Length: 360
Image 1 (cartoon, rainbow, N blue to C red):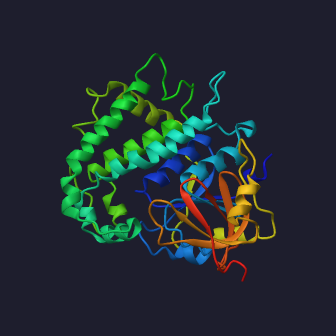
Image 2 (spheres, rainbow, N blue to C red):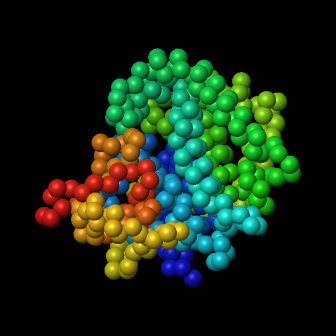
Image 3 (cartoon, rainbow, N blue to C red):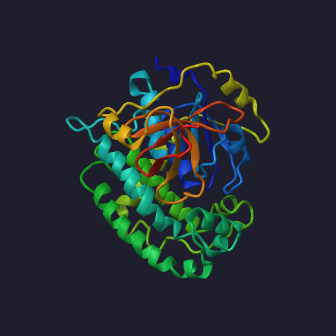
């Protein structure tokens, strides 16, 4: 049995984070026992900076033993590999005879639904949230000021953009006798990716979840909504798929345990693993490209800075490079936290630079 199946799995996130719920759905689909540790929707997050010396500000992060995974694209690949179908865990890529579609599914999830689709659903956030401290925090994340009135005026355009996206999805879920986005017997990664984004957009546009999102600064109240776009009459196939997915996931056991605030027993469990070897790189279709990495100075022992290539670039994670694959890097933070971890970042969507002081 893979060593990971005996290791604790901890998810750090907050309830109104769509990406946190994406990972929650994957963990539930795969029927993995895990502990959920809530963190604030905004900085500071001392639990993460103190425990792991992790300044990376995006959520969620997932810990498997002493290996800390950042970004949902890598998190889900790690879950699929270390908790495989061969050991009784359902797959995020249910088989389709004669077609290995996993790469296509990952691309759709990470580079359509997680990015341009998410920018549209984020544009449905009620202006009351942007007027709270949340707006100031997200302006720092994005790198420029946010005008709540201008964002409010853009909501109709974002609803139109959502309408266009849903029209594309309607093509996939209304054809033939298929239950799911891809012709699989069970839901998989793309179903999770469509559902979590659409659910997030529907909820946040109506004001559901804004209390948690704004750190308690905005109350839950009925606001706009997406009914003008997403309804059973306009999108019958997508509507039925949405309800079918909810019913399917609802029949699965909920294997999440919520860690209460102040309960730090999990830290002792992770510390006990300090002498164990980390999980290493998630295997990929092709091996490392050592020639290119060496030309860039990305060799083990070098000190590197890692930041996302879109938002959150003001909070670099600096560490010593432990290993680099074609899709992933592993670093050990320069500053030591309370718990010793190996931090994993995907390469796509992130900028990895050698620090000038790397020889120090």
